[in-house]
Length: 584
Image 1 (cartoon, rainbow, N blue to C red):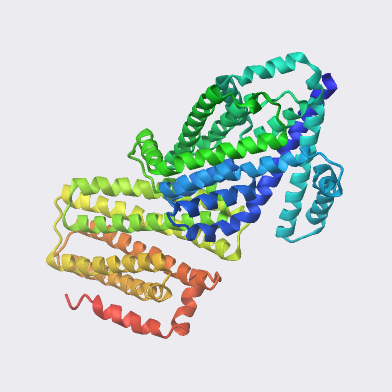
Image 2: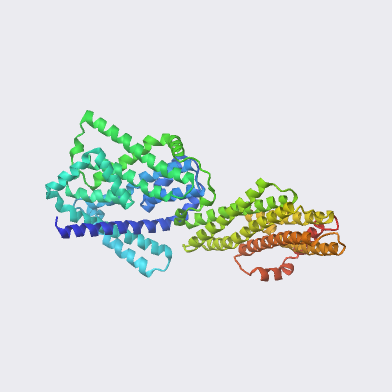
């Protein structure tokens, strides 16, 4: 093997890996949009989970990509850890499809049928069709199909280049002696695991082994431990993807690792134990592309059959390894692995915003209670929650920007726009909660005592603001337009309550029934209450605007509201009578 063969081998490997990457990405993009509906119907049935993992991996040609997506789904709460286990098992079997496709390169025979099955016969045709679809078609789906065909053509070209480059090694005794080292099960497993960990694909490492088999120096004794090691090495991708995810996502990655380590260890022990007794003749025979595909498939099927009944034990082992930690799991649901399936990523973003909104409103309600009775423990919780809501806004905002760069449907695009507008509104509500807390602390520290009339007026407006935040949260959670339409009439009543209370305070000052210092604190409280109702109004307007995929803007919307919605005045009067200062 001279320098030119070495360069050909390196170039063939580069083409092989490039083709696998191009084909896998295109297949993943083409199939990704359908995964949402499939996953929504997913149950805890082992058979359904296994078949889903098998089918998805067979389509996107990468068990690593499937497992990484599963880690993302578990992190985001789309599926449970128990469901993920069976999908991971199915992915291990689905990855064998690639080896069978690559084994076509080793077909021998001169008949027309066998000639047509050879990649050298159909690859040029696929490449031609692929380049036409990719360059001359404008439809994204057709372009994706073209990239799939091009990727496959490049992959098979790389495979042929590698096989041709290493074919001369069959006459070099040193190469055969080197391969004999891997007939040692320990060395073979380590070599397979290391190669796969480096190139991040078990399918690719199996393809490399199939190319080496063309030298005629690879026996079953060599290939079997290497293939088992390759299944262990592919776990590295999922482990890396689980960094900085939820504890359940880390557990899913550990299940993948344990599944392959335990399966490899048990099957190796059984195989070599049986071989010691029965002395299998085929072990020392040379293998080819087809033989490696068979070994790869048999190993993964046996591993699945062996460990599927112990799925619960694998789950417990992963839970023991990754113990529960005191972190804010709900923020971590936005796993970047979900960007591979934008429709699901948008759903997870909405779920995260619902969690954020709920926390912001709960924090605000706690601050309202602090105005009546100060509690140090609650004060600490309010500040902690406000900090968490700030982190929600940063994480969700950055994630939505990344999703927006993906190929989205019109519905998902509008949802992203809406969520980007809403996270700022909910974050400001939590800010005003802290402002109210500071007013409560000032009342406590300065021992301020409002007059009975001022207390009664504050009770009315705080009840009104508590109702508007509740309506706002409910309308956002459910997308109920009728609920959202109730926000603006109540917001206008709250504006009038604020003005009336300020006027009453001025009159009390004139009568020396109140002090200026009291007035400053009261004014701060009223300002924060009114601004919270303004943010609720913005949320309600956004929900109604985006439901019709329009964007009038808040000011334009408010100008048309009384005339376009006659029921507005009726709701306004209803709230005006419910929250009247005269009735106190």
